[in-house]
Length: 205
Image (cartoon, rainbow, N blue to C red; front, side):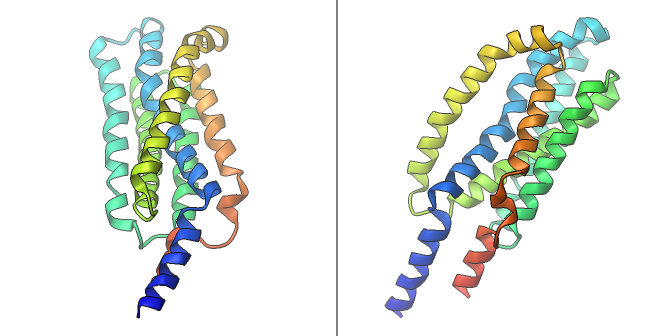
């Protein structure tokens, strides 16, 4: 029995602690949360042009935060039940389409719907991150590394957001966010083999 558990633990180590997989899941989480940081700033830039009230600006940003939180809760259910590969692809596509829509939309209802789609996609990416790390040998260490990288990436992103917005317009960062989601969709990891959750279920069975 002990030998069987050791074999299962060894498989889990290879599946969930592979450096490339951890790096990819970290990228999902960081990209998934970037939109919530820049949306309030960009909506503030949009405000004068679109003649939105402060209440409308706040509501549009809040919609994204609520949908992100709702999406992240899904990790409690499908930690071992769903194929993470397809969830990740769907979440990235949803975030990409939501950000692309904001490049062209200028009506309040349309922007709120687009930000809700982007927030839901980001929330699902956060759920993948939390469910994945729960299966690693050292979740605390991995979370510490993620936090360090996230703060650095997001600080640089926030520092450059004003310059990018000035150079590309108020919608420039939304286009950039859509491009980042699209880039993650092209990584071969999403199209090779079985997803980590499916592998773990097979090993445990």
